[in-house]
Structure formats: C-alpha cells, structure tokens
Amino acid sequence: MPLLSVQLQQTILSIGYVGLLICTSFYLLSFTRQRGLRIGQKATFFWLVFDALIHFFLEGPFVYYSTGGRTVNTSTGFFATVWKEYSHADARWGVADPNIVAVEILTVVLTGLLAMYAAWLVLHNRPQYHFWICFLCIAELYGDYMTFVPEILAGSPSLDTGNPLHLWFYLVISNGVWVIVPFCLLVHSGCTLISMSDPTPPPLPPKKAL
Image (tube, rainbow, N blue to C red; front, side, top):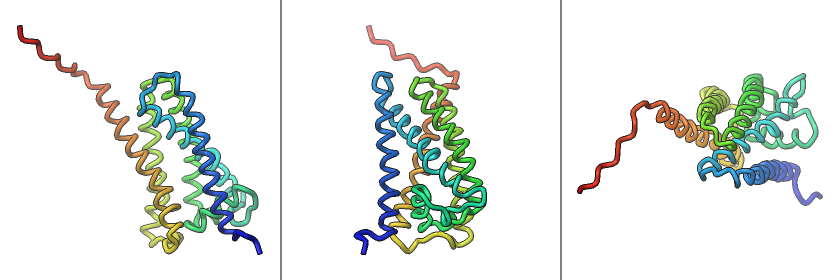
C-alpha cells in the first residue's frame, strides 16, 4: 500500500510547483538591486514576473492539454497531474470547457506577454509601465469575471465547495489573489496616470517670516 494516496501526491506536486515559480520570481527580483527602484516598484516587479510565469508555465500547458481534442482528464504527464488536482475543485478544467479554454488562451497570449513587458518597463524604471499595468489589470479582472460569474449564476454545478482545501485554497485564495492584487495595482497606476496628466502645478511652500 503506497504511503501517500494518488490525490495527496497530486496536491503536493501542485503546491510544490507553484512554490517553485514563487522562488523563481524571488530570484529574478535580485536583478532590481542595482536599479534604484523603490520598495513598491520592487513588489510590483515581483508580482508581474510571477504573473507571467504562471501564465506561461502553468496555464500554457493547460491550453495545450485542452485543445486539439485533448482534455486534462484523459492526458498524462506532470502538468496533466497538476491540473487534475485543480479540477477536483473546479471540474470545468478537466473536461476542456470551451469558455474556460477561450479565456485561458487569451490569458496566456495577451496577459502573459503584457506582464512580461510591464515587468521589463518597471525594471528599467520607465513611467509608462503604469499605462500597461492598467491595461493588464483590466484584462486580468475581466478574465476572473468571465471565469467565475457565469458559473456562479448557473448555481456553481462544477465547483466543489464541500472540501475545505478545494474551496478555500484553490477557489478562494488562489483565485482571490488575482482579483485583489490586480485591483490594487489598477487603482495605484490609474491614480498615478491621473496625477501625471494633471497640468496644475504643485503649490509653492509658504514663505518664511522675516
């Protein structure tokens, strides 16, 4: 009898792989040391790199396993195992649901490249990264909306809300991060763009009394 069940092995592999991508993002963060970036810019760079890695090296394989007549549930291999684990929480990912695949194709191609480009702009401290971050975050939030809101309106038939791991870690936390962080970045970069376009000069400091 195996020491670990198949599902537990899938869980460990999935979480471990995401942890590897997080460690890779921290390593790439070291390239910001000599760039004179502020802490907020470094945090933004880390997120953009992690975002791009997730889109390319996690969601990219999902698109492969869900096109050309393939599905995650009928495929084998490391990435198929990772996505089979997530499909326990959301069954649509195991059967190549057309709406999910359509959103993921756009996510991998558009937002993956946008995140990578925005990270490059941040690394070189070019202020136009705020514009591209706004574009990126709107795309991320729209993807989140189209992934979950139609499913919720239909009564969530594909979501496993009875298992605490599936509900809170996979569905709420893992997806919630891609709502909270893009929303915060959208607000910050949007406000920065507004202030940059404001022609009103800053008020002069008061004159000192003689």
